[in-house]
Image (cartoon, rainbow, N blue to C red; front, side, top):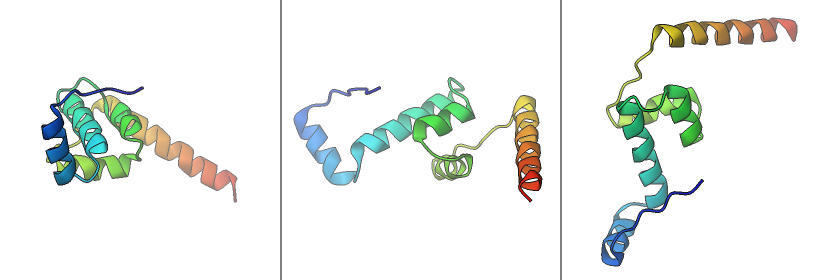
Length: 92
């Protein structure tokens, strides 16, 4: 899905000169703000950015937003780790 942001042409030109990839920067900031406002979860943030959890953590840290884990997040992470461990053991 695409989202269009209307800006005056001169402002867009100036921003594109200052920001290497303005479209990607706008997308990143939108998703980070939605996450900060608790309107999307961590998984949705990762999917929206198209990055792993580890990379997303670095992006959040760069913007001084820190990942808040709920109890459900901890349980899910534990299950994911256990499944990965079992898959690794099965492949040996």
